[in-house]
Length: 430
Ligand code: GCU
Image 1 (cartoon, rainbow, N blue to C red):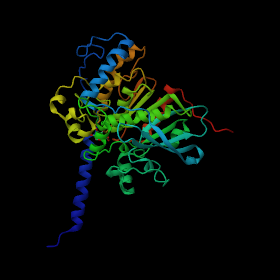
Image 2 (image 1 turned 135 degrees about the horizontal axis):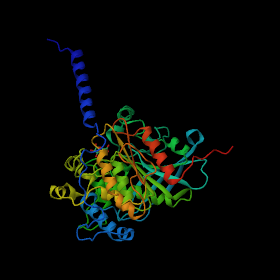
Image 3 (image 1 turned 135 degrees about the vertical axis):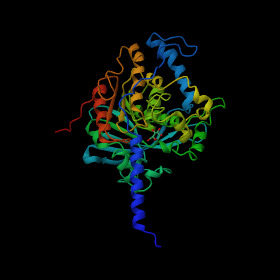
Image 4 (image 1 turned 60 degrees about the horizontal axis):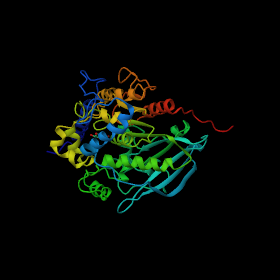
């Protein structure tokens, strides 16, 4: 009997659609948790450390203790470093995006104990900016050349990129599933609104791959002693954001007091971590950052600690992979959010993305309010995750659709930054 290829093809197609539907419904997210988890008072005693009553107490005493705990127990130690040397600044296009912006590519060499770490940043500056431009430091998913849609062949292409970035067909599939802006920030939209963008590909610092990341992670912690917890990839990527801040704040074209960090999902986790550890980040935007981002890790209804550390052990300090530590983490992510106070934070969620559990990110954000109050700020100003109030120090929005980056995510980002950075769109000279 001859196999009926047509029928097999139909069955496979149907199976594919069913599987796609299943993974989508798994990600369907309820708005807010039914019973918000009980969290210990953010200002209460932490281990041996007495309760906190003033902003000075928080900054000088509690914050370093919390940073130490996040380093030791979850993310590992960021590399010790001095600022990078910007060893090349190449103009890629003087009048890109219909004359709106100038594109440069910077080569950043960060001196470390052994070999320097080299990575490249796309620097897109609005041409009609009056005075130093506010900056958004945004990671990209497929490397800098892909971030410019492959239009400029002289732009660096990273030695390694994730599978979904390798061919135009794979990139098209990634955009179809995860939105038009998954591969690159919308540079033109940001330039039009008056923002410079510095975009880098974290995979140039540490490959997002269990096996390949090992050598890079070991090299990054080469100057640490054995007792220090080695950085996982999230700490290394957070360190990348800080190095981009070094470069931005040394350049008079940019306003060093208005630097925002932006990241989606795994890079949203890294952006929050970077802002919690580096005070120069004046704002942070984390879209669907999920477990070990803005969402509570121990009570999440989405990705569990177990699931994330099994699939991505190299994102974390090696200690977290040991189950003993995992079972009794003495801290949760509301404390990471609190470390960013009093600076503005925007959290983005997507209705069908259950995995990143936006409801519990809202609970975490509200739990950080008492720390904002120490600085005479309100923290979260909205009553539920979806009743967005962008004037809040911590704001949240939930858009329709699934996990990914869509134009709405950037529209909310720009509106939030306009409010908190007081930016008005520049007008070209008549
Ligand atoms: C996986 C992972 C998440 C992560 C996401 C992403 O789904 O489990 O923790 O946020 O990838 O980066 O897109």
